[in-house]
Length: 244
Image (cartoon, rainbow, N blue to C red):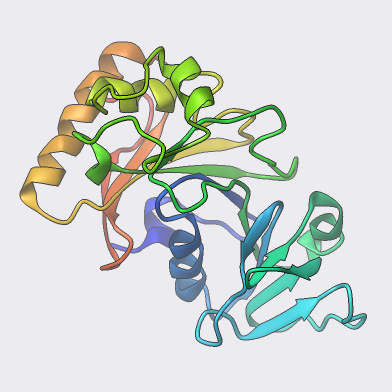
């Protein structure tokens, strides 16, 4: 199945991607499926400088004054910063949203760690967002709550009522998903959960068990997709509403 079908993309969608463990890959995989359209890729925070195979056009507003709008994948950054990264913000994105068929935004940072906690002002969600996609990699279940696994570990522990050294269980994952200060904090539009790194039967079975936990705890509508962003394999777990 294709991401565009699973998340039901429509022209005019502004899709903000938050969470950890696959945000950038999700954006580029989705952009590839929309490559015949006018697609804007950007960030409201920071993002790695895109590779030549990942985008068709790159503009940095700090030096490029003439941004040409064409079919294909257009990356617009505000500035190029250190460590091969670019930065962006809501103001520069707002100026271009209406010129593209689809807008794909990386709206969160996790320092390449598997999970994170959120401080005040995070994530940075554009108010024109129509879909907020939250990404959680399930391979982390069974690991420990330690710094190498979790960005802003103190914030994470405050949200989940856990402590350093505790095991990362499905209950912990469910808490970070449904807590008002967790994965979908400050989200705008439809909420879509993507469970990443489902690459064998064991991980897929774990995803279904997580749905059972979410169903017991959560009463909100939540579309849930699973799969492997690395392999570009995706499937629907729950279409929203009742998670059963």
